[in-house]
Each structure stands twice: as C-alpha cells, then as structure tokens.
Image 1 (cartoon, rainbow over the protein chains, first blue to last red):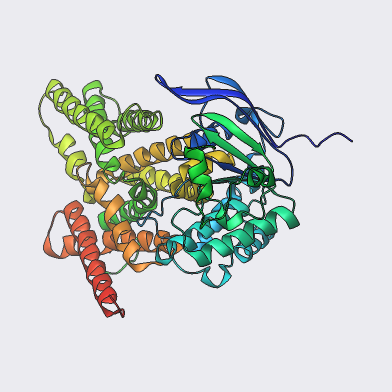
Image 2: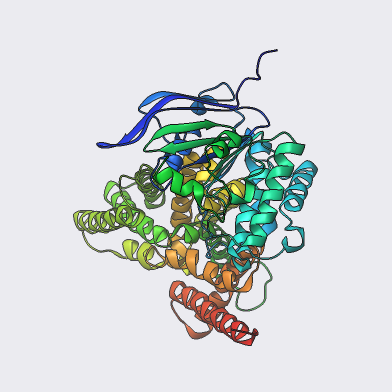
Length: 252
Length: 277
C-alpha cells in the first residue's frame, strides 16, 4: 500500500533577503495525522519556511504543495489552521474569547454569511479542547499570556482544519498552559487525525508525542526523522536538559 | 412638510438635519470601530481633505460637489490602502502625503474657482441646518448602503482586524476587504461633509468608538455602543445648537468629546475600584 499523499510538501525551497540566504534547498513533508516538530535555533529560517509553506511568502526557488495545490491556488484554505508567532492582542479591539474563536469560522462558512448552528458547535468544541469554555465571555485582554495563546489555538481549530501549523506557540507560556496546550494538540492529532506542524526551539512539553522531528540550521535541514533516532545520538528533547538547543548550536 | 415632532425637532429644517445627522451618526462610528484598532484613526481626516479637493474641483467644473468629492475621496482612500497593503508606505506616511496634497489641491482649485466662497465653507465646517430634502435623501441612502454593507462584512473585517496574517492563511480576501473598508470610509466622509464638515468628520469616526471601548466588554457591544453614542451625540448636539444658537457641526463633536471624557472618567473610577489596582 502506498503512503498517503502529504498534506504539505516542500521541495528544494530557497529564499534570501538580499545576500543573506535564509533557506537553501529545504525539503520537507507532513502526512495526514502526523505530528511533526520543526526545530532550530533563532535565525535558522523556521518562520520563513512556515511563511513560504503557507503561501505568505513566495519562494525564490523550489516548489510548495498544500493539499496537492500551490498555496496560491488552494481553494478551501480553511483546511489549514494557523497560529502565527506571538499573535498580537489589540487592546483597542475589545473582544471576548468566544468572539476571537468564532472569527476562525468565518472563512469556512463564507465571509459574508451569518453564523450557523454548526459554527456554534465548532466553537464549542474548540473552546473545550483548550479548556477555555468557562472564560468564553471574558475579554481576551484580561487573560494571561498562556490563556491568550490557547484562545488563538482554539481560533485556528474552530474551522476544524486538517493541518494545524503553530509558530512558536509556547514561547513564554506558563507551565499549566503548556500542559493544556500539549493535551489539546495530542487530542486533535492522535484522536481526530489532524496533522500538526509545530515550530519551536523548545519541545519539552510535547517531546513524547512527536512522530517526526525536522531540524533546521543555517537554512538547511540537518535532521529529519523520529525523535528516537535523535535520542540515540544522545540528544534529549526534554525541556529541562536544554540538550536540543545546545545540539543545534554545537552538533556532536 | 414637517412631521409633528416635539421641540427642538418641530421645524422641517431640524427634521432634515436630524435625519441626515442620525444617518452619519450611525455609520461613522461603525466604520471607525475597524479603523481605530488598525491605528488609522486619522484616515477619515486624510480622506476629508481629499474630499475637500473634490468639492473645489466640482465647484470649478460646475458639477455636483458631492459627487466630485465622492469620486476623489474613494480614489484617494483606495490608493492609500493599496500603498499600505503593498508596504510601499507606512499608514501614517501615506495618509500625510494625501492629507496635504488634498488640502493644497483644494485651496488651489478654490482659488481658480474665484474666491473662498460660502459653498466651500459649507463643506469645510458643515451646515446641517441648511440641508435640502434631496441632500438628506442622498445622505440617508449613502448611510443605508454603508450600514447594509457593514452588516454583511463586519465578521470578516473583525477576523482581519484580529490577525491579518491568520486571516490571509485562512483564505479571507484580506486585500479586497481592506480596500472595501477604505472605500466605505470615503463614502462615510462624503456623507458626513454637510453634517459636521470635512475638518471634523474624523471626530465622529473616532470619539464614539473611544467611548464605546470604555463601556463594552465585547466587540459586538462596542459596535452597538459606538452607534448609540454617535447617534446620541447628533441628537443632543442639534438640540444644544438650536437652544443656544451654536454652530451645529462643532456642537455635535463637542458632545461626542464630552461623552468620551465622561466614559474615560467612569473607566478610571472602575479600575481604581478593582482590588489590586
């Protein structure tokens, strides 16, 4: 039996800002239901790779396929849920948690359509997954940084995407929120079959749940395989050991 | 023909002013609620100055100043937003360029038209008490179009205002929505010209929104409060203007500013009353 077609396929992508090469012939795949971590130190090109993969930035060489289409031509874009790096909470845009999460349904139902009953169900489920149901009517500015981050994850989940892409979602997040964040991702990935691409330089919270890890250094992929293979090299993904960040800087 | 309304709206000219004013009082804050979070509070001001150039061009060419202003304002607003979206210029720089070009073109065109006549002053400072029935119909129709459009697209505009990048990935037409909002802002400015004047039009887009943000705890409530305060400022402003023979445009904006000060004071009091603050 052949392997399922990847939801995301990046082949030989290159990108540079002037003379500074950020990505140099990067290839990667994310298959349905797979939990993939994309790790690398600061400046390794992770965020640029994500932007290229999602069609936010045009690559200067190589090809990107999202659900078999080029990102520019993908019609049902709601199939991708995206949590950008450090989403800004605009204090001049007062909104409740529920309003923020509901905004994730707009693209799927059609941007001029009024919310339908199934939208309410999707919002309800997304709030449950990130354990924010009780805070649904709270203005998002009154939440802690970790709770805000969970609300943005719920917004990305509200369209019930098949691929969830999260860029540095646990940077600066408290331990309790990290645990809830991990539960939310594992539920969506392992129970509901949602593919997850998690971009982070710190994987401690989800170290035991990752199917595959892709390591990026200096704009090239230096490792792509199961975490066990990395562990076999003596590299720990545990948050307290800080082995992975050190390994990325000084590979043995 | 006047309707049997109580003082101060017992006269036909006050009823026309009220109808035109309420239309503007509803749609200006509705638009402003989406401009303020994008730090484009002065967008209405910049577009107002371009609309002034349109009024002057209309007077010079002998065509309707209202429609000439609408054409220039929509073209300018869409260009400003296009430059911002393409990152060719920051929002405030693009606004400043169009702001000064608009007012300078208005002054030059007015000079060419003959003199700084009262027709121009009507649009600069507003003259809601002299709106004709046909002016009122135009303003109310423009207002109805703006409100109907906003009812259809406000959820998508909210998603874009929350996070432009995430909205783009989700497949929302971010560029089209942003350009559409800019065009609606221009239409609102033109509708409001006769009510408060191009120099004060941005105030009705911003002040009720600032007040509403201090009262509301959700986006839906912010929209509702902003519209209520906008329309309330018009009604109270017109009443005070008639009672004390004040300039109505300025009085309406002063009432909106008073509402902002009052809600800010209430907000400060509420925060001080909270434990630990």
